Image (cartoon, rainbow, N blue to C red; front, side):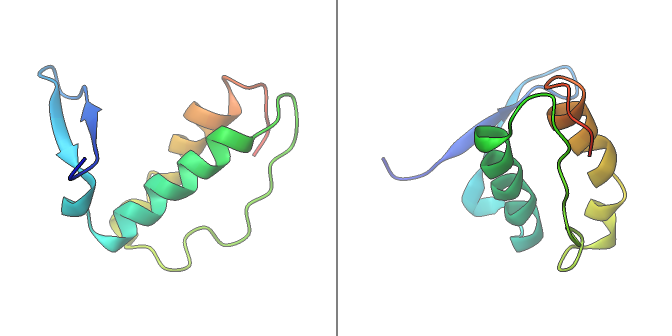
Length: 79
């Protein structure tokens, strides 16, 4: 396996994004999310200390809603 990618389904036409093409901040968000998604308990309170510390402001603006949509609401968690 030479590279890893994930499938984006937005907008309407699915397309692949290769991880090695992401910026360091985008990789940090992706890996942080995957780490939390694979270990997050259900019906709990998740505390994240300064998740925006090394991120570009463009990524920070949607971070809270992204985590709530993917880790909070579906798992019954509070962030």
